[in-house]
Image 1 (tube, rainbow, N blue to C red):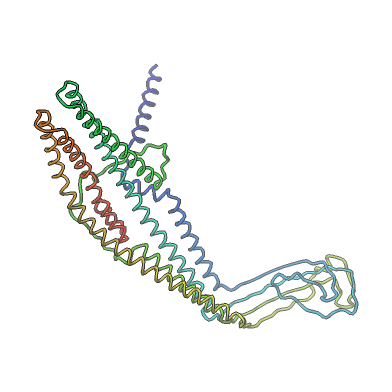
Image 2 (cartoon, helix red, strand yellow; image 1 turned 30 degrees about the horizontal axis):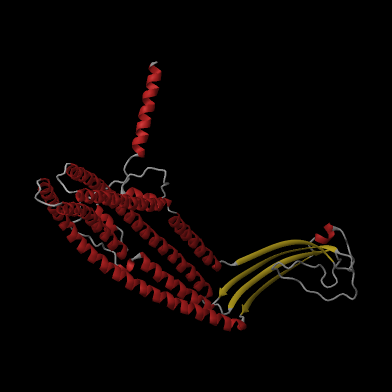
Length: 460
């Protein structure tokens, strides 16, 4: 019995800890880390960076000399070559045509090794390597851009979810207030103290409050679904947000960060893309130039045809035994002159694409400067609104209490009281919206400057 009680106690504690962990509030830094880890687009950008690193390594390997080795056994006739070969990128022997066709095939063997080294290529290899390095830089900048944008998306969805949670709570209180107001007015109408139209107006105000509650709940669920998408949390899992200080305080000063405006990941991505296109145009321009190659080769052959009397031997062992060997050393220059026109046109096409990317970079810079100026303007306005909203709320609360007292004593009409209720509800909502707007404006400044630490430093 004692053992069963201990097991029951342990299970109860474990279940309590699991429930406590499942219902723990999630802070913004935790969700940012989870979103970076789970979001498929971010993982795709990371994979693209790894792929570009491997591509750059493969491009650099072109400097390494090529060594090709092959070995083959053949069974063929020999009316042209004394031992036909399968051409697989090897040095093939040549021979004269026989005076008569002999249909009897014989075995043959051939082993060779070919060494090639492009010692002079007039910058073709270096330009190809440079293109791969630029593509790697583009992939890395694209990852940085995606990380910044995803952090901004998560933070914005987090702030909006908190704001609409607060607005939903405000509208719930407003519905309760409207319900009490309706009960008071309806009681006065039933007793004959108030006119019947007051009951209709109070009912309309109650319905309006319920509609505002439904709207706030809908917006809260919408933003929560966005947040779940960005951090990879299924809809079935619990998600309780830690409001931290977003709904209770605003930063009194703003650290604008140390990053230069041109270090914005989006601008860096556009610039690196333009650089990569320009490097690709240079590589296409140089592709027409010749190459100077050091060549070395060695090969051995066997044949079923006797080198003494040209007699045929069908034995596999006789035909595959090596009988002669050769080697070759030399320098080869190759220049395909007919490629000039096509390579020139490809170069011009890539050159104009580089101009396109440069203009797109300039357009992005102009847009980001405008967005940064707007973000600073919104920050200044939102700060003023956040400092004004508490005074507005206090005044609205006083006006509502006075209107309620005057209405209950018959000194004010119903419309005056309804205006007080609407003003109080608006002031409560404005306070929550104003504080969140301050944080969203700081987030916009961080996004425009490309420095997410501006927002996180303000949070800390």
